[in-house]
Image (cartoon, rainbow, N blue to C red):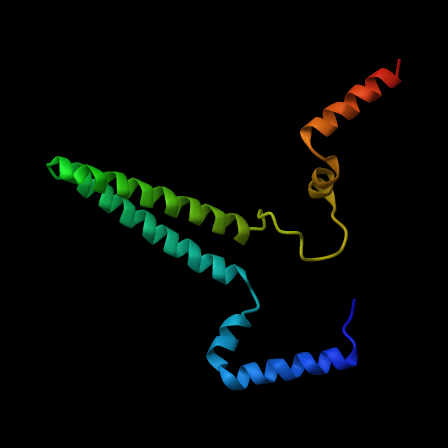
Length: 134
């Protein structure tokens, strides 16, 4: 639904006030491609993964029982960075759980998945069709 003229004017005034107050933050928010945000997150996750490997190796290679939690901590850092990077990669490539941004209709495989319902609902529907055919 399009905005009315009054709402559009108010939105323009808010935008101009935002640019006047903090132009650096406004330009950061105005990035046209949200994938650049996810690319930065993916780079940070890669660095975190490498840091986790280093921490884990220090905990494993160094002698002493006090360093075992360090190795476990390194593994946890690796795991967290991997999960964070994977979620960023999925969202960057359009595999996230957000709705499609272009167009109002869903087509292809996504449309079929959205209309199918849960596993139990599909099984119940198959059961009903099987008995109705007899």
